Image (tube, rainbow, N blue to C red; front, side, top):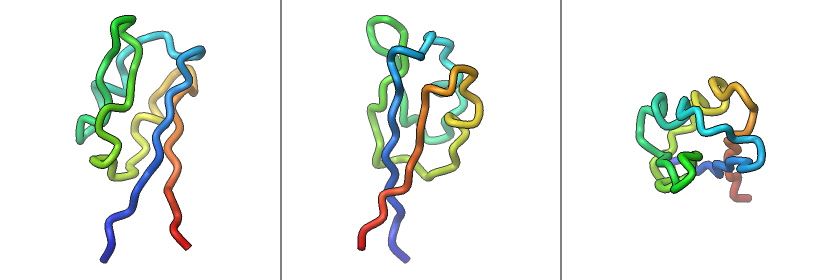
Length: 69
């Protein structure tokens, strides 16, 4: 079985640096930048659980599966 890959994006304009996505990601995909906003630092670790997307109060995190045809 092939590992699924995901594209994770953070809308910096909407991000208020709450840190929820950083705290709840079970595989540490995110870290914080100099403004304490979330940045995707390890996208290859993403399992697609979408906890970051579901828990983000500002709807600035998106997780999309990359489909290879």
